[in-house]
Amino acid sequence: MNHGSIEVLNRKQILLSSEIIHLLQLENNSYDKIKEISRQDFHEFCNEFGSKRKELMANIEDIFNLYGLGRLEIKEVDSKNKSAKLNLFNSSIAHVHLNKNKESGKAVCNLTCAVLSGIFSYLFDEDIDCREQRCYAKGDEFCQFVVKKRGVDR
Image 1 (cartoon, rainbow, N blue to C red):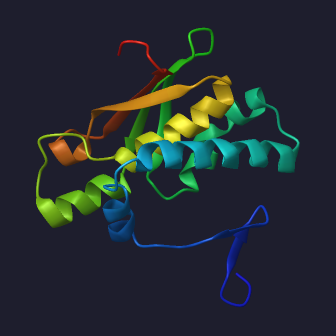
Image 2: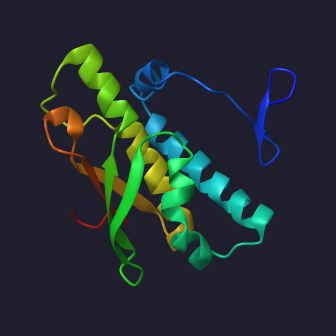
Image 3: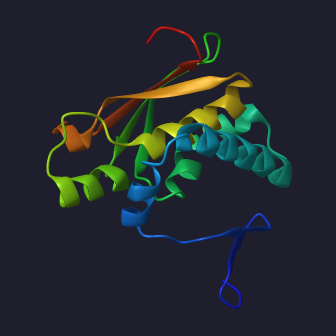
């Protein structure tokens, strides 16, 4: 931190509470915007550290955990078919939702889906979408996400 600003990879960052993030994710069209920014961030991360996509894939859990959205665990990655199954423990978004709204009947981690779709769009060099199959806010033990090429049936 330097004089009231936070910079990571020469880009200004803003530290916001998870409550604010929860509200921001409800905005229309936020998924595509967040997805594109996440894709660009990972591209810049690779350039800055001289990493290749395969090298990033090996460290994706550690890198993702820096976002503060929860602890990511990769269950499956299929590079050929451009898909992955991911578990997220201690989801910040799901916890905020439960604190504010009680248990939900549907998945609530839209921001996390958008971030993961952007990351995997960069890693797979393909237009990727993400869907949350399980959500802590629905009463599941953890959140689970599936990323696949856009337009592929889930």
